[in-house]
Length: 127
Image 1 (tube, rainbow, N blue to C red):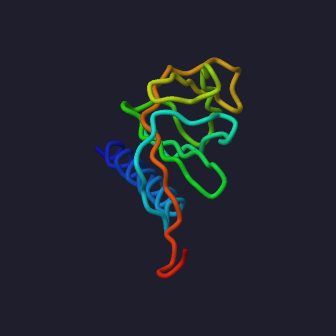
Image 2 (image 1 turned 45 degrees about the vertical axis):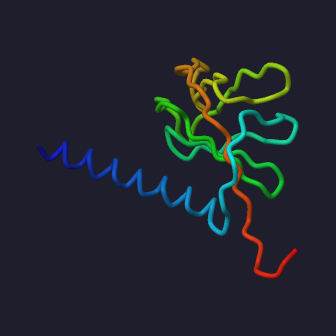
């Protein structure tokens, strides 16, 4: 019973931390219309928020990708390896993870969702 309570407590703490990371990254921004693909030449490596959410940066814009399914093992301590074809990263493309300190055994393959742009809110009267 105590182990179960500790596990639930640990999971709740992790989820709260993930939520804070996402809130911090998207603070002062508004969502735009989802896109199917992004050019890989404009984005860097993703920031892992949780096992359902990745963030990509493109200059001042942040692209949020909510995965269609949870990706086991997806956390801040992995390298995300994406299988890219044709210079674009698209909804439905596959990726897997590698542990940074591990022996290089790939994790489960997971699918990307749509890419939603989040842009900074312009102050009233700004053009």
